[in-house]
Image (tube, rainbow, N blue to C red):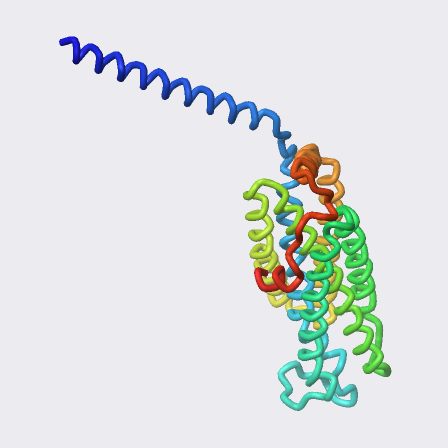
Length: 281
């Protein structure tokens, strides 16, 4: 009997101890949670989605406007036929030049962004490239209806230059946006990745609307480029709002304090080489 009583007392003590630990952990979690600012109106969440969207929309829209480019570089002495197999020299080489002018600057400036990430604030690394992309897309949209039949080579060179500049800036925006998402809770990185998928869906929807409307190549291109410009403007506005968000400042300051607690100056923190970053990407 005494043994049974001792066992019951021991079990009660274990249960009380476990309950004490559970209550302590719950209190700690609650305290930590209460100290984290809320993402008011889901501003930061929407911004992460927009970063993902704007990382793909420029490339998608330039590809989808293929009939527009073929029309621009057509043989002006005969009626334009999008399905014609006999292409001019500029029509034949444009897709290859477009791919190179898009991918090479994008990758290079992703690496540049990684290199300068500890030297330039995210606000500058993202805001200025976003503004540059908006200006470039506005220019691209504005010249859609300009007659360039007598200067096709010059138009080709200008277009490729614009594509290089847009994708260089896109490398900064994508790299900076991913860096900001990485400083926030894990779910925000998920929002960024989901935004990339959403960007592809939106581009497909825009193409379907263009086909349903049976628009001319120039009208379709105008619709694509204007849509991209609108999304870039929305992204810029939401990023400005994010910079004022308490949640953003909380995690940025938390990251800074963690660096200081390590007892090392920011400049002396060991960094991965650009090659290691490229391999992991």
